Image (cartoon, rainbow, N blue to C red; front, side):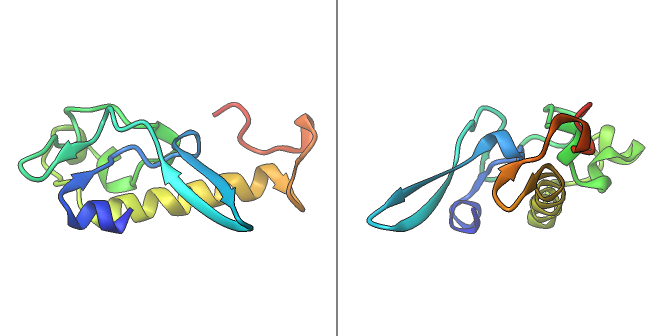
Length: 109
């Protein structure tokens, strides 16, 4: 993610469905998919110009100023999205297995 960001690619939709991993020779590798909301370098879309996966959006982008496009999308917004993803994944799985339906918080998301 940081390599793409430094190259001017802003993903803008960090969420569990856009994260994948695979194994090659016993090594796990992760990839991002779904770049339809991304932008190349600045000026890119502001908070009000694109939709994101709401439960994983940075709080700054959900404020009134963010919705009016007055908050510039920065790297720390994507990092905050990673934190929300980690929390969501952690509450859905136990020891690598999906928890039973009634014991998964936030399923309505």
